[in-house]
Length: 241
Image 1 (cartoon, rainbow, N blue to C red):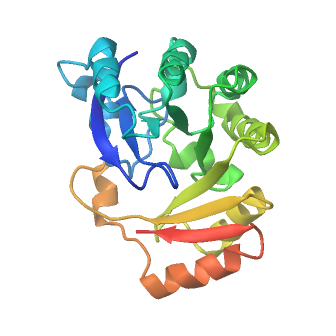
Image 2 (cartoon, rainbow, N blue to C red):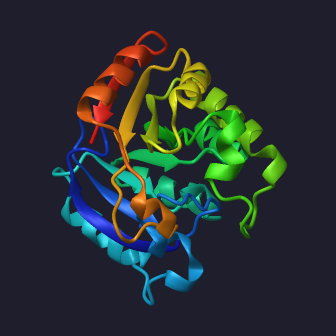
């Protein structure tokens, strides 16, 4: 596994659980608002990676204190040895939460069949029509075919919903991108979901695309209104700032 770093404690990333978060290297998306270009762009990758042995040694010391491990990115499903990695985490008695952009439903299917996941979070970037532009597929992006991205995310969504594993969908909202029409199309896409969270974009230096540094999120009152609208489509909706 290409592990960039670890957050030793999170009370937010794995709902109702105490956990640590493992950040993997590499992503096949190029979302302009991404705040972690060092995990996405090969030229910005850290010079040294965390060894698996060091991670497992850390987990051994946290046995009984942590419930689970969140595996995020980048995009974890690009890692060839992800199934074995998750198997080793679970072997040590920890639950596994996976964050994914949904671009590799074939990997998700294998993980579900092997019963290696206890919680899954799917990032819903935009409406199906808006995906190619928002995730930057006009730029070099290995392992991903531009014409099929929305279908792949749809397949991942269906697998997650049908898996029986607890899950959530979530969207990072950018005022200049997610207008009323776009948001309505996203709600149709997530219709029937157990949990859906709205995450507000925060413009700041360090976005993968510097143009996004001048873009904006929504006000609290606007997010509350959008959340109420979403509740007509999903079982539970919340806002994360």
